[in-house]
Image: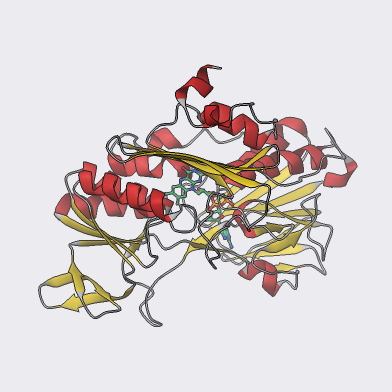
Length: 412
Ligand SMILES: Cc1cc2nc3c(=O)[nH]c(=O)nc-3n(C[C@H](O)[C@H](O)[C@H](O)COP(=O)(O)OP(=O)(O)OC[C@H]3O[C@@H](n4cnc5c(N)ncnc54)[C@H](O)[C@@H]3O)c2cc1C
């Protein structure tokens, strides 16, 4: 075991990042004494498969890997404080645990759209418990409203529609997934959802739950209402950094870490996953969480003491039938916005685009110089491997750039 890990490693959070880190560290440093806390009673499951549980494709027990032997797991226990002077964490059950190395992997919490004071209304889809309750609600009722038209909102709307629900999707942006998609792709996605029987309302902010005798649903900011038996909240997430902030660690949006995933305030504290802010970026997807977990475990175990994290180029996929969507990097080129990355006007920025409204496909790749810097593939992912390689590994472009969006490109 590497000396840098110390004897006692405490990990707060056993979600996608924490669980991976623990598995790696236990394998690479069998002598480490690892203690894990998680608020959830059955932590460590694969959050990516929750919509599969909602769809009825997976059972809860199918999405949890077996526990790693020899780890001291405190499930259903909330970590309430970190005392950095004595290097001790304090749990909600009153127990205290000393550490040499502390890893915060506390993830994020769902954001609520309501005016202040209504935070308890509506069901987020964030945990397995949320998912099972939502599945039960959907079984009892016939109509659902999904608030938020980002990736998770779209995936949830499709899943509920496939279960026979009458679904309305309400999104405050001008088009669906407006942080990631340009207006043309957003319009195409809306057409696909309409084909699935989903009613989409964009430019409409849900601001309060509807609570009238015999009616539930949401009230929109133009005072109209959407009645529904079930309300699902999918309005994005906020990094869970209360513990870090209270401990006096430097926090911006997330807990600020360096390339060693170490707090810039205290070298005995580390952060990985959706609570970490690295080079100004907070990721909330699985791949960066796993890469960070691997780097930190390699460093702390001594397997690769000099391992560093330099950021992740993320290609995000949505695969909820019948939608196939991949979006990555600078995917919007339709002007400045406060939401999501757009390509600033630069003479070397170029766009290759193929759109087919009949087949409901839209494929766009943004290049800069000889590199792919972003893109959208909707409805046809035949070139995704070519584009992914060009983007993630910064491979030079093919001579004929149309190959990035045409099936012939995939073959070559
Ligand atoms: C329904 C759903 C579908 C998704 N689908 C995808 C997808 O297809 N692809 C993708 O890349 N990403 C997807 N994501 C996002 C992905 O799940 C997150 O990016 C990822 O879970 C972040 O990992 P994490 O370990 O940082 O946080 P989490 O997985 O949220 O884990 C954090 C854990 O910390 C615990 N915790 C927090 N505070 C405390 C405390 N004080 N004491 C004890 N425990 C604490 C929490 O209980 C939680 O278990 C999806 C998310 C959801 C909700």
